[in-house]
Amino acid sequence: MSIPALAIKDLSKEYDGTLAVNDISFTIEPGEIFGLLGPNGAGKSTAINMIGGVSRIGSGSIEIFGFDNQKDSRTTRRMVGVMHQEIVIDNFFTIDQALRFHAGYYGVRDDAAWRQRLIDRLGLQPHLHKVMIKLSGGMKRRFMIAKALIHKPQLLILDEPTAGVDVELRHTLWDFVHEINQQGTTILLTTHYLEEAEQMCDRIAIMNHGKLIALESTATLLKELGTRSILVHLQTPINELPEDLCCQSAELDDAGTTLQLTLSASQPTGDLLRRLCDAGLPIADIETRKAGLEEIFLQMTKAGKAEP
Image (cartoon, rainbow, N blue to C red):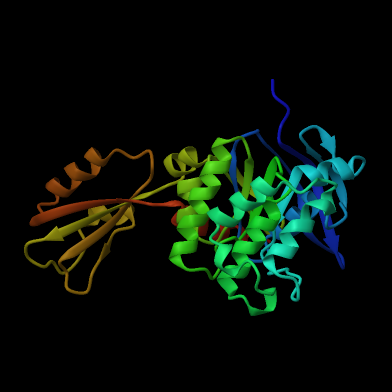
């Protein structure tokens, strides 16, 4: 059995009497791309700061490849690279200067070949000798990714890496993330672009109000919690819903020509089709739409808000 890349047990953190992270536990296996999702204020960044050693642990434990990140902090900091959500740069250094000495912060020698690979893959070469203060926001984010990777971490944490960046950089980043993941780097990702998490992540944890409210493989979340919408287009308008369809959360549009019905993940479509036929509706066409991760996320976090 392999040692987890990251093992979090009973982790909590309090600020001014409020639990920002409330007794969460999960593990990430080596080589995974793991998504940690949640609305603003859910506790994701607080958890990431504790994993990266930026913030002290309130209670609980964090192990990175078997090393305790409190007792063996020097070792674990070398193993982790963090791209923070906020832009953190040294304004008056050039990209070249900053990348040359940044690995030394972790006690790692500068690897010129690896540094050049990061520069090339992230499109930094034309801007290499510009001071940070003169870079665009997108270029600063490219630099921050290179900085997080310069010491060759085994666990890379990306906290909202594509927030406010253009489509080109987003594609460049995800291609590179896939590339380094295939070479063995474990990825912990937070993002508000839920279609990215759905496409990228092997497993997903969802936080809300500091608590972990879901932890499943992406496929399982979509299969077990996802609903399906059935759109029924009618040849002629109707004035009201058939009584037999009201229990399907059916909605009729203002024109009376389109019905929208909701099916649970486990409910057979055939049952609904039979009921539609029995109702004698003048059906012209039927569309089926599966809920994506965004709908599931909203459903779960809204439910969390309703709790006392």
